[in-house]
Length: 225
Image 1: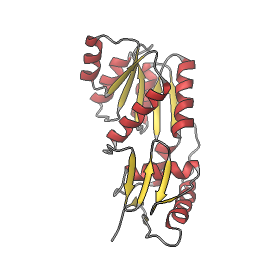
Image 2 (image 1 turned 180 degrees about the vertical axis):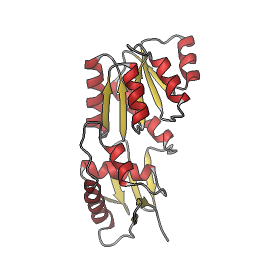
Image 3 (image 1 turned 90 degrees about the horizontal axis):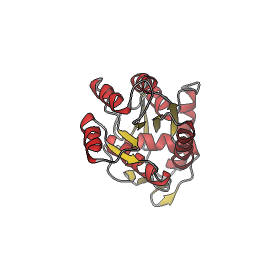
Image 4 (image 1 turned 135 degrees about the vertical axis):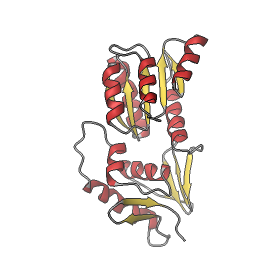
C-alpha cells in the first residue's frame, strides 16, 4: 500500500511515516505544503492520503475539494487541531472520509488508516481471504490451508495488494506504483521475483495455484475451478 502524507510539521510527518513503514510495511511519500500535495495526488496512485488542515500554499480543505473535483476517490484522513462540530461537518461535506484531532495516538492513526484502505478497496474485514488462503492485516500473518506461511516483507506487501484486488488483473506497473514511494527507482523485474517467491511458498507443491499470469497484462489472484 502507498500513502501520501501532507503535513507541514516535519517531525510529526516523519514520525507518522516511520510508524506506517515499520508497523504496516507501507510505502510513504511526504510533502509539506498544499500545492505540492495536490501535485502528488494528481500524479500518483495512492491508497490513502493523510492530510493536515493548516498548510502553506493551499489549506487541507481546499486540497480535499480539488482532488474530489478532479475525480480522485482516494480515501482521505484529515489530521486537525480543530474538533468543533462545524469544522468536522465542513470537512466531511468537502469529501474527507475520516479525521483525527491533534494530539493523537499513532496506534489509533494506523488503525484508522488501515480501515480506510480496506473500505477504499471494498474489503470490510481485517482478514483478507480467497479459497483457503487468509491474510490478517492486523498482525500481518498469512495462512494457507490452516498452515502458517512465512513471507518476506515485500512478498507480504505484494500478496496484500493482490488480495485487495482479488479477481482483477493487476499489471506490474500498478504493483510498482502501490508498493514503492516516489524516490524509488522502479524496475519491473523485481515484481517477477516476488511473484515467483509467493507461488513457491503458497502452493508448496500440495495446494491449487491461486496466482495466475495473464500474458501481456499482469497477474490475477483468484480461486479458479
